[in-house]
Amino acid sequence: MTLISTATKTPIGTLHLISDEHVLLGATFGGIDSAIANLDLVDATRKIITAKSIPIVSDLLASYFDGDIEAINAIVVRQPGPTFSQAAWKAMRKVKPGKTLSYSDLAARAGSPAAVRAAGSACAKNAVVVVVPCHRIVKTGGALGNYAYGLDAKEWLLRHEGAL
Image (spheres, one colour):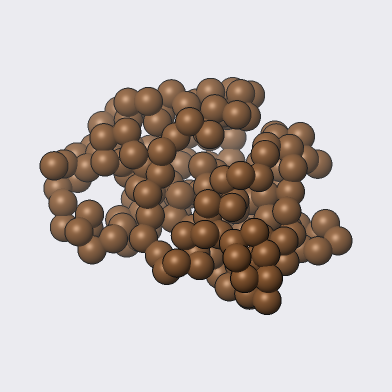
């Protein structure tokens, strides 16, 4: 089966997407090559076609950036990664828009309270940004922490969602 890629302009840059039908496999501000590099080995060998949009996914992302901050909750995602990262990404998706969670709390919700660095690593390796909302993870005390696409982008996303 063929994968679909597209690029969509957002207020914080061009978001490059790759999907398997309606399942989002990659979302990155880093370019389509970055999205392809983060696919699992099976998906990376599949043919990828470029389209104007991805059914369901593109509409939900457009709704999110237009102000319906809950819209991304309906997007189905899949990305490769170890067990702890999978648990951390699942926990990130449970953080409601307008709220934040500390790296320490993320580690606890992912099942390993002592794995704070691994929680940060799961954020850094997240291949489905915005939809798996690693931008909602902050330092204990509320400092923003890091974001692969810059703190301005993280701050914009958190303001858009009403967390700042």
